[in-house]
Image (cartoon, one colour):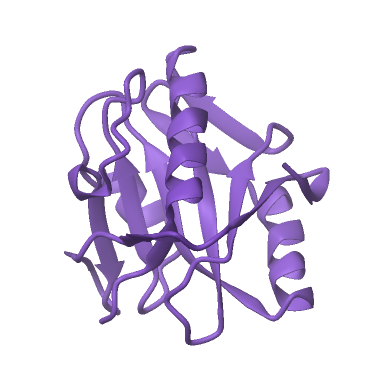
Length: 161
């Protein structure tokens, strides 16, 4: 499977968002959108607040927060390809991560470790792909010079970052 292509601007914005919430002692995350069949992430959807439940060891995107993002993706001919979220210490998929993430073949999950001081080196993040019945380790995203659009999603809708 071809790894995702993630703009350096996307990495910087994700790391800044992780650090902001990590300073509060809670997890956060984003969803990465690509054109259908393409590896290049063109939109990073950062989690807002309405319908997003953050804790030190748990991040939950409610269906009322995800629904507007699925509509946005459909309206812009994009697909949700990956979820990135943070952990306090290590990059691993917890049982909750494995069961609660989008479990669609080819969907990618990534964990940014050390949420208080996250690293912009995506090779230290954990990366997994759902292969039909389980999550398997996968190559990290390739960091590129491409420009990325940023939005915020939550139960109040999708809006520019």
